[in-house]
Image (cartoon, rainbow, N blue to C red; front, side, top):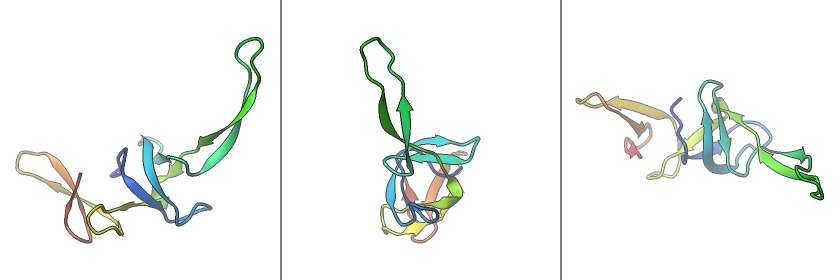
Length: 103
């Protein structure tokens, strides 16, 4: 998976299509990412202690990686990600549109 935590992304498919957000969590084995404030669903929570009330909370649900695209910080457009291997063996991600390294 080429996306990482804190990457700015745009959703390209599904009910949230066109919205942008920041990745809060990645699930590489499932091929999904969690985006802050997007793809929400309501979850009912039981009271944990006596006297406490149950409540309904909104939780972000994971979305498939194939339905999101990275927004490049330098050109500001959605882009694919390339990987460049340096001489010392480290991998660097770069924008396929403007060829600038992604941090």
